[in-house]
Image (cartoon, rainbow, N blue to C red):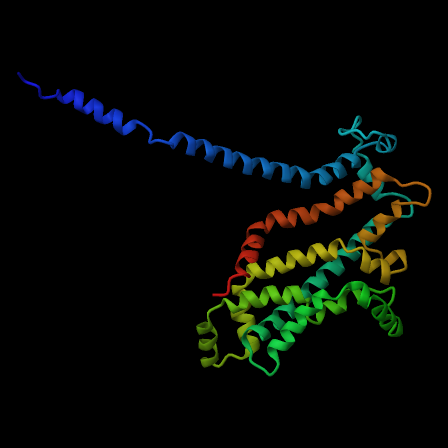
Length: 306
């Protein structure tokens, strides 16, 4: 009797065995779905937490004055009053055009000073050998731990003595002397990752230190420079404390300081305050989205010392 199995039967058994999931495969797949779902849920919750204040600012900016003070507050505006933006810009005794120009001027000059001087200091700490280099670098980093409030009174007295109060000089000139310890640290870490062979070749060709810094290190460090530029722009554009201390006349106010005038002794024009805050936030949001790729790359690469 022929007991040899049928070829088609064997093939069917092989296919069934091959397609049968291994023990525990379904459980592993379920755990993977649960893990990914948990991560996405946490990311969504975190995004909502961070977007919440931004949404509330924009929503309040288009509410009427009465609705802005309702309690409990309304989540969505009952009436969208888009004219709040124009009314806030043209509010009596406000000079938002002048304040915008002041803010742009201070921000641009500070960014130029920070990028120039911090990159020079970072190049010196990263590539040049001189006595006490490590000591001065750690001393520069240690200055980060010094609170701003500790140096406020000495700086105010100094600027008063030399006649800089109620001018832009206290807000601009210090940025041209070092550019900040954090910025120096970020750029120094990036510079240390640039191959030394490039610098050695330039030295052999007769290039000086300034030429090497300008022609080699700066073009190769665009991601790190953009990171420093974004940090600086955000800090200066939104700065309220500095202008509040050193500026007195309204003609010299910045946007952050001028917007605060909507807060009166007895009442606050909340809808106008939020409208101008929304307008003031637009450049920062646009800058981040435009330079986001370079910003993230700069943050990642500054932590790599090749």
